[in-house]
Image 1 (spheres, rainbow, N blue to C red):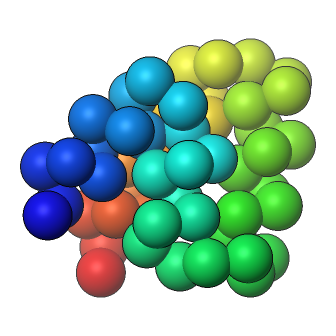
Image 2: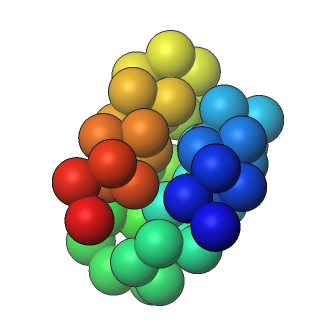
Length: 52
């Protein structure tokens, strides 16, 4: 299941974070990072998925 989340994190970073932690602070932080730049959103999403 983590492989699917990582694929979603690469394609659409907030979706990968949402599937891992739901609508929490990490989700909203990832939306902000993705809006600032696509790469920071991906890095944050993969970190959140790999951490848990």
